[in-house]
Image 1 (cartoon, rainbow, N blue to C red):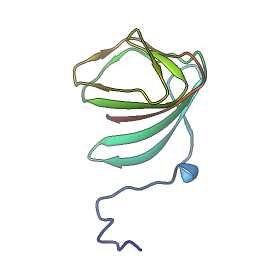
Image 2 (cartoon, one colour; image 1 turned 180 degrees about the vertical axis):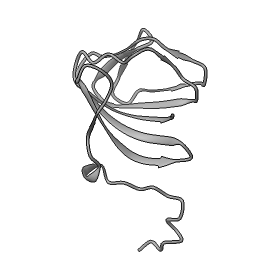
Image 3 (cartoon, rainbow, N blue to C red; image 1 turned 90 degrees about the horizontal axis):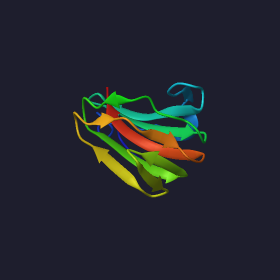
Length: 109
């Protein structure tokens, strides 16, 4: 059993207990926040086929892992178990769920 001291500065959340919230535009994706620390968030996202992410610039690094499905990211087709790291200052101009997809994104707002 963990003591409070061992969990100091940790944010551990159970996915089944985290509430879903709308994600992006168009109503085709939803997200659960699984943890937050130092401004970063670990987010589980489920997207329907056809979900398109809004273009944006990353002000901080972003890390991505595709657990299920197929997406197009920056012109590259990605499949389950693929991932990426986007550096601060990179422009995210192309993201679409080609099939129903489930992925984890770590980012800082």
